[in-house]
Image (cartoon, rainbow, N blue to C red; front, side, top):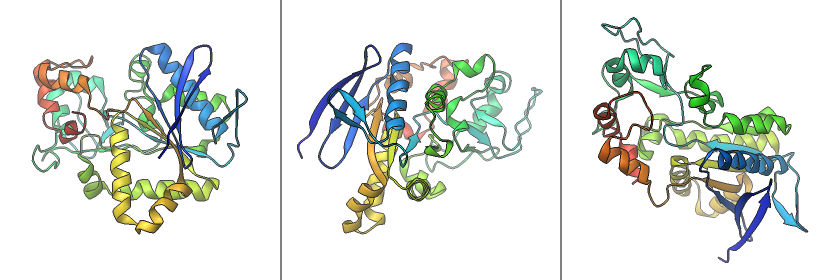
Length: 300
């Protein structure tokens, strides 16, 4: 397969790196500081707004009316909510069904032991803690801000800025679909416990019937590994002759945003040193939390 590489400059210094071939177009854009994240948001919004990305005579052209944008969030980028009733001794705050667990900094500070029970999974079979279990939230609200609030909201913002850009560009509400998942689970358990890959397949097919065209996949961080597992799962789910046709019908482009395809140095640093990434917990507590999650193996 011959891959043609094109560089196009957008918005006074925002560079989008686009790899195209004669069957599909795939892009990889890496965000760093705040300015780069803003450039990323602008670029991805324009891609979704224009739909089919064509570069000719220095201009972008395309019909966006049938295109959907499907977001697969990254590691720790989906809200988790309690699905248990847990009384927390020595704390005025308890956990009740649908209470925010990840990330509720108030309960993290005032009832850290209860919070850990709701976050922990068994290190061997990835089952829930006997006293508390959490499940991923759904919809765009699950990935925009992890801890909504006047102060905590901007500090925990993930996809909110990108969604705002989409709204400003006039993109319809049904053109952007988020597919959150329990980022604590290994890919095999995502399917075994939550049927996540079945749901993701139905999401693509629903978007196709709703909009009449294929989707652009925006996968961030760990979401890229999840998407790649989905593609391998799909090979076993449908007939080999229908696999390529299904991809052509339902997926037009795939943007790998900050993909840890060669591993994540930040994850290694966290596991070895207890780097808390700014969370108000001790390094020992954070190390205990990390080492109870199989999904970390996907980031090494």
